[in-house]
Amino acid sequence: MAVKSPNLDQLRTVAESLGMTMSDAELASYHALMQGNVAAYEAIDLMADYVPAVKYPRTPGYRPEGEENKYNAWYVKSEIKGAPGGKLAGKKVAVKDNVCVAGVPMMNGASILEGYTPDVDATIITRLLDAGATIAGKAHCEYYCFSGGSHTSALGPVHNPHKMGYSAGGSSSGSAALVAAGEVELSIGGDQGGSIRMPASYCGIVGLKPTWGLVPYTGVMPIELTLDHTGPMTANVADNALMLEVIAGPDGLDPRQSQTGSKQVAYTEALGTGVKGLRIGVVKEGFGLANSEADVDAKVRAAAERFKKLGATVEEVSVPMHALGPVIWTPIACEGATQQMMKDNGHGFNWKGLYVTSLIDAHSQWRNRADELSDTLKLTMLVGEWFIQTGRGRFYAKAQNLARKLRAAYDDALSKYDVLLMPTLPVKATPLPPPGAPRELIVQRAFEMLPNTCPTDATGHPALQLPCGMSDGLPVGVMLIGKHYDELTLYRAGHAFEQSGDWKSM
Image (cartoon, rainbow, N blue to C red; front, side, top):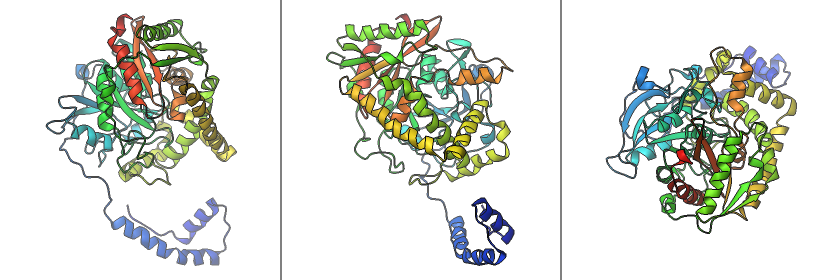
């Protein structure tokens, strides 16, 4: 973009926006002094950007219609073949449409981004292709990922493959639906409040929110740096562990990644090792919520009993702060997303990692089209901006402090148990809001399911969603929470549970 120096009237407007009052002489002085800085911006504008090279050929693809997109789960189909061999050779992957795939359209569920095409591949895309996977296309997601239901995308709702007209969950709605429908073996999801685990539970698949920082978020559209997670969504635990092996580990471009804690691990080694001797704490506060469905709680307690029969020690444990998790998460999500994703055009500042500058340019247009934003995002921004203006960031800061206390509460329970267990969601998939539904129902269907999932986004603990039964034709999910960087134990427990019987008949 062209670099221009402000004229004196424009500089006066900038000064006034910063609370400065200047005379004409002062403005002229500062205007002259800033020209050296403007020259630096001009030099930057002329330089080529420094981004990773794109390795594998691809085409923009096409938007499938009719029976080819029965559940409205695909945004674009575009086959990208990876290496001829590798751990994921022969497996097809659907990519959540908040993930950059160079040369393939990306809209992140938002009308404002429609028409944008990234110029870089996210690190996880390169790793999947290097491992021999085939990218099958981009999966629909919710409007800028702000919904736990599947009804807010600008291109219409995603349907649950188990029951048309019902939610597939969000925000990784298409990613879950395509795996559940058997159209792909693997998919990529994202999780800031439960957006991997919520659709995985509604659709009856396996979804892992990894430890914060384990999987590089490089090239994925950010929402809030301290909440952002990306991870695998699969039909079974073995594929999930295999996929994590491929995408985990430092990439040198995501500063959140610990060079020791996030090192690559052979997660598939946990498969088939059983749960004998494993200690599982059933979190009392995860059950009996205000909107908990009795059949969901019952199926999850039955899953806990199954673990006991498989040889694990299973006991109830109380983690009182779990009930405060959604309260602590709310200011971080509302203020953090409003400031970083929206006002700061996605990436924000003070970040040493990769910036996707083309995405910044495309996303910044929301200011001219804010009326198009989804009801769920408008609500989040109204809350976030009000408290940014009136609280000066104090509530966000205090919530981040309390998130460490919440982490310590889980860590205390995990010092006595290897895994914590609770319902992934208090409810099964709900009916999609009908066309013209009141805003109150749209918002309810977007956020009613997240009390058990959002706390671990604030604390960064890994959490694995497993299907554990069916009720009224819809899946029920159980969630396992582990110690930081202990995905191995989650896979150990999850695989043993999965191998103990057909979840659909549990």
